[in-house]
Image (tube, rainbow, N blue to C red; front, side):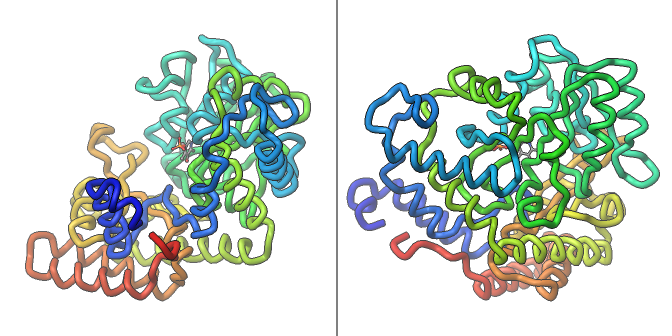
Length: 414
Ligand SMILES: *Cc1c(COP(=O)(O)O)cnc(C)c1O
């Protein structure tokens, strides 16, 4: 970064501080992972400058031979990895992937059935603060109070009553596998499209740990920066029949020139995700999450649904007589990063999140295993109880020592 320090010392300081931050904290944020030095090298490479509106072979700009080659690689690898008829690798993010999926299938005002935000749905699944809630008529389904699992009877009843144009299956804060076949049969019964938002879990599908939505859904939305450990960005998979509509919905309908460096980096991780090393990573990530869920339960954070099938752990903080926000803040004070989530059927207003949400994608990338998950849960428990006391400094020191034991793989010149 010496070139940058000479030209812009103020910004160089920010980036240096960020490197120090991430090498001294422990990151259990559910959506985060660490991109490898190879991914970061591709992102910094020459394709970032190239304008390539359109698709390979049909660009609005000249000089696109390498842009075409990179995108064709990414598309081919995505199709092979997920067994999909068609892939579009241009979405800038998960949100724009979902936006394009809706644009391909829906008209403003259409009815859509999706997981309610209180029960784990994403902002793009009908939040009033998001385009989804503004432009479509969303109705939310949820989980059962008894076991916290998706209430498929409720999904079916709502689908029969509302005849939605699309059913969205997928969530941001739901730690369990979804029954794609059941969603498909409900969608078929009412003549709805089935959209799967697998942004959280697509990497586990690639790694063979979770069953794939691809054979069931009309359109699958995903991202490459979460479990896949790739560049920040989105991805769409669909049937041959919808290929042209999906492509047009991405460009020119919702996006302009694609980020070609991002697409090249997607090609890299989509290739790596087909290998045995990645399958092993996916398997270890889930075992780590299961171990973490159990260990957090011993610290008084009760795992929702009783455990997890994924990299996600959601837990109720109420047994500790704390809000999720308080747990999050006490943990941050010692360098432990985790997030909050709503607890379904919670009486408290949705703003005071009663739960916490954690993920094991990053710590597994760092090489941690089950022993470390137990250590992390104990650190979380101590951080929560230590708040404001002298013990807090001791916990913070232990967090730093643990972070040093598992350094993030940074490119040499960073
Ligand atoms: C992460 C996520 C998104 C949004 O992805 P961004 O890249 O942050 O826009 C959408 N849906 C689900 C289910 C997600 O997990």
